Every structure is written in C-alpha cells, then in structure tokens.
Length: 491
Image (cartoon, helix red, strand yellow):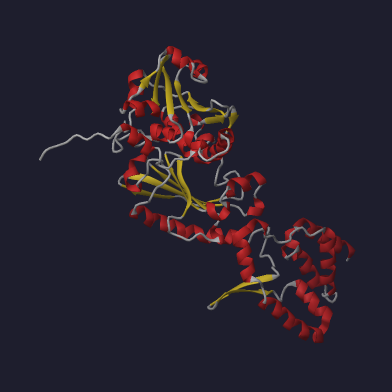
C-alpha cells in the first residue's frame, strides 16, 4: 500500500477554522485560560473602537522565550491526550490561534521572558498570498509599534495578545466601534461569571484581577454564597477512574430576599428559570452552567437550585469537552451520581419557593390559604379555623354563616390556578403577594378578631400570644407584638 502525505492547504483551512463558533466573549475567555496556565495574577484587556481598532490582552504570567513562542503559535501545538498540570485550562493546542483568528485577520503575540521580548504574527492575508503557513517574526522596531507594549515591558514578564482587522465583529454592523463597545459589555458579563472563582477570595493566594480599559471586573457568584438565606447542602463526592469529582448543591434564597445586585447575578439574561441546574467547572473555570443534562425538567419550582460540579482535566476524554470549552456531556457513571443529587435537592428548592416571604416564627404559621394534597392531586382551600374567619362567622351569626360558606367554597373553586401558573412561568418576578400591612390596618383586623372572643379572657390571651404567627400579622411580626402588648395594657 502506497502512502501519500497530504497536508492541508493553508489558506483554505485557516479560513474554514474561523467558523468554529467562537463569540467575542468566548474567544477572549480562551485567551485568559492561557494566562491562568502561565500563572498570571493580573490581566488587562484594552480596546480602541477608533478607525484603526484593536483589542489587546496583557498578562503578567511567566512569558515565553522565542523558540517556545514559535511552538505555541503552531496549530495543534499540544496533543490533547498528553498529561498536564491540574491548573492547565488548555487541551487541544488550538485555543490561542482559533479563538483569536475567529475574531480578527491579524494575530500578534508578544511575550517577555527574563526581560527579553519575542514577537510572532499570523496574518491571514500573508497566508493567502504565500499559500503556506507563513508565520512572521517581528523585529524590535515592529514590536515597539504594538499598542500597550510599554505596559508589558514594565511588568518584566508576561504576554501580550493583539487582534487587528476584526472583520467578523463588524460584519453586518453599521459601525464597528459600536459593535466593539457592545461586545465588550458582553465580555465583561461573561468573564465575571466564567472566572468568578478566580476573581473571588476562594483561594486568596491565587486571586486573579481582570480589567477592561482599566475598569476591574467583579465576580458574579451564581450561588449568592454571601447571602445568609442561601442553603449550602451536604457535598457529594465520588471517584471516576481514580480521580475525584465534587458535587456541591445550593438552594438560593427566594427572590424577595435578594438585593437588586443579587437579583441581577442570579437571573442574568436568561432569568431564574434559565439559570437553574448544574454548573460544571474544570480547574475552577466554568465550562457550562444552567443545565440539568436532561436529568430533570426546567420547572418554576426548581429555579432556585444550583449545583456546582468540579471535574479535573484528567477526565476531559470522558466529558467530550469541545475546542471552545463551552460544551460537555457527562459520561454514564457521572450521570448516575448526578441523578441522585437532583433527587435530593429538588424538594428543597420547591419548599423554599412555595413558602416564600413567610417569616420563621416559633410554632407553625396560621395561613389563610391551605395547600391540600390527596390522591386526586393538589388544591387550595380557605382555612376555616383562621381567627379572621372565626371573627367573620361570629359577626354574621348562624343564619349568616349558612350563606357565607357557599360563597367561600365558590372562591376556592375559582382559584386562578392556570393564570397563576402562566404568570409565574412568564414573569415570576412581577407576581407578588401583599406583605406591607400598616400598623393601623393590622390593629383594625386585630380589633375585629378580639370582638369575636365573647370577652373570654383565656381565648383572648391565646389569640394575642399567637398573633405574630397568624397571617397577615406574620408578615409584620414586630407590629403584631406591639398590638398584642397594647391590648394587654388596656385589658
């Protein structure tokens, strides 16, 4: 059998590889992966939307010497099956080149190692003209014209990546400057989430600082761990091929217990419903978030559930990680373990959501509406034992109560279940329950309830003692206690 060496035609292949599917934000995230692997602690993203627009990413990592930089610029510079450091976020040896050239036609990389600068450039127009993989090596005068090169010199080590001729970003846009500005807003949001564990104080010694045109990026924690209402459930740990996978479930507090900033972090562009599920990290870098991997449906009552999954890079072959590091598929053994986690946390999320806004009080809160579950399903009915209903029955008398009960049953039967479900699914944040009762309103309600006690001191004392646990007084327990104290002073 005869063997034929058939290398790819450089101009055709390099243009085809630009269509792998990177966005501006995923491309920049891929460059930052290299910076983290180089042990950088500070990364500065700079861009200019002017006529001669550019983007630069500058880090203070270890840097590369000339020969190493040339090797790094080669497509497929590393075997994806090679073993690597646990902190290495790369895999295919393609990220720097494919991510960059998906956005621009000219990629320049300048690296500083031991105070010495080396620079290499891929220019697609040169490749098309020569028909070969022609890599350019820049001289000192050419290096001096690279934007922000003095920042790299001042650091004494690190790497600068420059993008020019960003034809993809400007395609179909009326203004490249506007498209770049809007794109950088997406970049900021994306990096804040993808690298939130590096940007936070999770590992203070390895804390990363990222800025865009001098403005630092703050971490976007999808679990709201600083909110006291977030529940951190017991961690699941299991082994796959001798390596450990950590699974940490969280239940977010109800939306009403979040600050405005926390609401933005928790909901993002997809809303709470779209952000529920597993968040898979590889070396603490977020790979994919907001998915149940078809192990559970997206439901309104589970939208507070988040599950952090930490996988080592030694299991890349099992998770079928793609080049952009944006898609993973868990293997069967992992899915079986994740399924058990799903079953454990979904109930917790539903409980938090169902009983939103009800302050925790000693004993059980006396609700006006009761949730009833029987063999035929779930329905809601008015609590006939609620003190307000008791007061109403006492005021109308026996004859009036005979007429009142059919009215209550009709209200129960016409509870707008379908409308509520549609509203919760489409815009749950706007569905509200009144909790802002004033002291005067609660005082009037308490007065009517006390009238129904027939001056029975024991019943009156019991009612006043339980007042903070009775709806709607439970929404403002301080006011309820003030009312109870005021009434005791009078009587």
